[in-house]
Image (cartoon, rainbow, N blue to C red):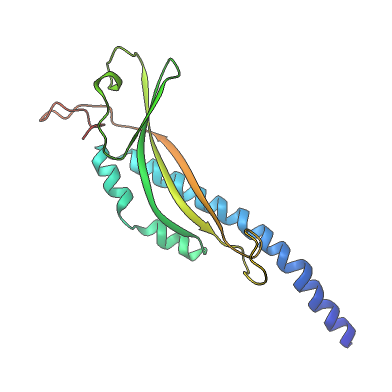
Length: 166
């Protein structure tokens, strides 16, 4: 009977725990990526770009929700990605204004605007014991990026500025 207990202990420690660790990281990655995508979609529905940046800088419930799964999320950075029909693109960080040649109705033709968020995430395995090997016995640090189309391409009637630049 004592050999059976030792065999079960070795079986659990050498086979089951590493497999659970290997399964936990992809599941937590899917949860983290889904949360970043959802945040990006939420931010892109803001009326003004400054409101989207303010939403991104607030510590909100998504960080608390991530902690329930053992995921550590940092603050995210927001930028606007402009893509023209000619495969030209322009990335503008946070509140840097979009040049006149890239605004809607310019000579470049049809331009698509996307809100891009980047978030640093730490995804730990289920059990962190032994030598530190990223993804197996230590957390994996990565940067998750998501984009969503910017919804509001209108002008503010009071200032005559595009909501993209406010």
